[in-house]
Amino acid sequence: MPFTFSFYDFTGFTQWIDVTLRGACSPFWAVLWEMVIVGVLFLAFYAVVGLYLVYAERKVCAFIQNRVGPNRVGPYGFFQTIADLIKLLMKEIISIREADKLLFNLAPFIVIITSFLALAAIPFAKGLHPIDLNIGVFYVMAISSMGVVGILLAGWSSNSKYSLLGAMRSGAQIISYELSVGMSLIAICVLAGSMQLSTIVEGQRDLWFIFKGHFPAVTAFIIYMIAATAETNRGPFDLAEAESELAAGFHTEYSGIKFAFFFLAEYMNMFIVASLAATIFWGGWMPLHIPGLESFNHVMDFIPPVIWYVGKTVVIILIMMWFKWTFPRLRIDQLLNLEWKFLLPISLVNILIMAFIVLMGWQIGL
Amino acid sequence: MSGEFLILFFIVAVVLVGGAIIFSNYVAPTSENPQKHDPYECGIPTKGLTWLQFNVGYYLFAIIFLVFDVETVFVFPWSVVMKDLGMSAFIEIVIFFFVLVLGLLYAWKKKALIWE
Image 1 (tube, rainbow over the protein chains, first blue to last red):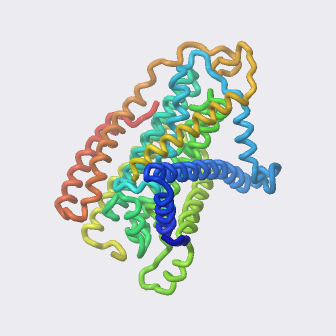
Image 2: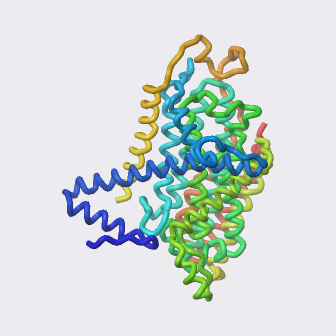
């Protein structure tokens, strides 16, 4: 098989790697080598994205507050978070007397594993999609809701009152907002008629779902953005680690690299929800197409899918950072009121309206 | 193929966390003092148990959540086949949601949705 590589379709490239490896060694070793390649690539991807999201957040925060932000380590402080990581690696891991040792050590594993598994289901480009399940949306929902177990374990096992309060608030918040995330995704699943992420992306070839589904799709997107921000424990919903009242919330007692993992998982969860929003509502790696404008569609096709995907995800992440640094923090009762008395009823009605539109065939462009 | 990849990602995540913690244990300096392993409190010893029964408000939220979460599991498959089944599926989901919303209204009326 000849070597093929294109920024528009990675299927040929991955098949070329597969065929070459199978030609060079026995099937068992070929599969093993493929796994090693994928594993190492994702490990690097995970670390780089996590570190640079932290850097981006600090720079965006500085920009909004009219400061400079990190600017000492490397040009524009570009290596600041790498230096931070090395510092955290060199710090002693303090164990807490009377803490539940097993659960205390297990918690960082759970938060990292869940974010890693959720990341695996995101379609990055055509042919760059490690796990393409036919229940993709449901899988991401299920896996990311496991993350709350890690947070509750961390808070409960630390034997500290700040941790316990932070974890309980966090748990109530995450499970509440998870419902709205699920409901807004269901509205789009009704429109797409599928839960497979690759099918959902393909379904947006002529027009993105946020435009296709009239106002229910826009409502679903707005609800998703609010609920996803809350689900990832980010401001203005960051009560779980309200530093002015709770020290650091559920990870008060964690030090060194274990703390770093909670921090990393938080930023990776933000990346995952932003990717999912880009995939479900804005077409993932699909270029912006408008039915009837052939020449425009053709120009858009020249931009590679990876650029589209990264661009959309970055825009959504920037919106979430903008939220965090401009809105004041909510109180816990306001937070739960917002979910149970506003978002949940609205999203239930929203699903019905979307179902009715799909039933009548009123969606644009199908 | 995807089943293998699930296991792969699981293993990679475990290796990442475990490896970093083991590495950190080797390179990090250690020191001892009597207060070091105390749980965090503002400079004074903590009072009383931490592992006590938490307030009831939280418990009610968890129960209502459970109802709605199971409901989500039912609605996901419905969302995929909605287009094929047509009007009957739509009417059924309206009835289903009606019953659910009655439950939510009951909880609302009973003041279960207030965090104190």
